[in-house]
Length: 204
Image (tube, rainbow, N blue to C red):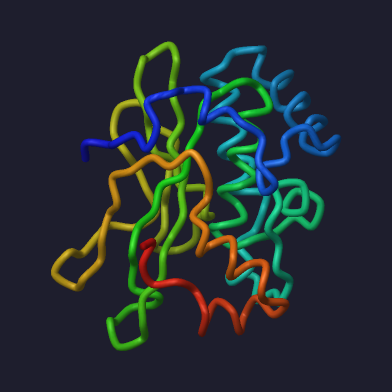
C-alpha cells in the first residue's frame, strides 16, 4: 500500500500530545531502559519498543478487563489497553527518543462476520531514518490467528483486509490519534461494554 502523509512536516509526528505524554516520568524511564537494552541503536530501539507494547501490555479485550486506559503513561502504569490506547503508548515511547511516528487505521469486522458489526482499528506508522521510509507496525498484541511482526522488508500486520466484506485499509498516516477513538475512551468506564457496543465504525 502507498502510504499518504497527513502532514508534510516531519516535526508534526514528533509532538507531545495529551494522549502521547512522552515527558511523563514513567514514559521517560521506560524509554531509557529500552534504549539501553537496544545498545543505543535506533532501529533496534524501535523494534524493542514495539515488541514491548505488543507483548507486555495485554489487549484489554483479550484479558477480559473492564479497565479503560487512554494516555500513554496510563497505559504503561496500568499495563493494559485496547489498540487505541496501545498505539498511544508506542507513539510516546518512540517520540520520547525523537523518532517520528503517526497513527493509521483500518475498518475491520469486530468479530468474524459482518452481522456482528465493525470497528475502527488503530496501529502506528514509524519513520525509519536509516532506510528513509515509513513502515506500519501493529502493537495490538498477538494471539492464535493474529501474528504481527516487526519487519523492514515486508509488512506483517495483525489483520488481513477483506474489501469484499466492507473492510478498509486507510492509507493516511495521521500525526494525532483519531478524535472518535479518543472520545470513546474518555466517555466510558467499562471496557468490555465499550468494546462490544460503542467503538466507532468509520474514521470520518
